[in-house]
Image 1 (cartoon, one colour):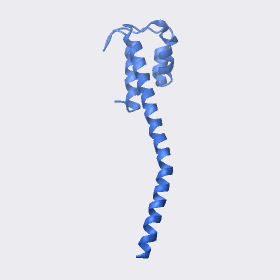
Image 2 (cartoon, rainbow, N blue to C red; image 1 turned 120 degrees about the vertical axis):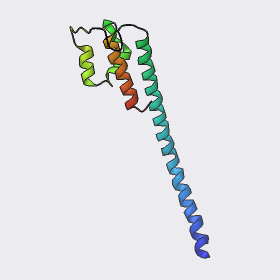
Image 3 (tube, helix red, strand yellow; image 1 turned 90 degrees about the vertical axis):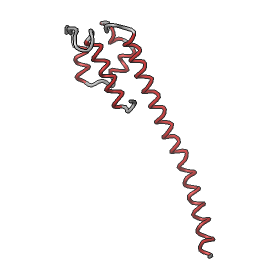
Image 4 (cartoon, rainbow, N blue to C red; image 1 turned 180 degrees about the vertical axis):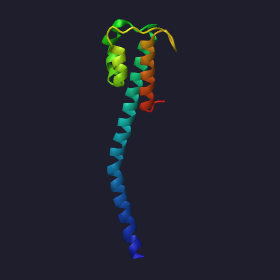
Length: 117
């Protein structure tokens, strides 16, 4: 009888104290994850919007803000192919502009890797 009168309130107080400490930390982690996901979605949307503006990737596309932010997440092999000097790509396959298709594929890969699909 006395044991229950002491242990139950003490356990309740300790658990309440610990949850009070943990709740803000958990909330900050959830907020960080939400913010990261929102930022990543906005990057994907900006990259796709920039590519939707053009039928063919212009020669100066590498100078754009969108490409600079995309390049940081691209695979090294794709960057080398995309930025290769004096390289000619012949149309065909899934689209008329092979360079645009490279970027579209890379955006899709990044989106999948980030778990946004």
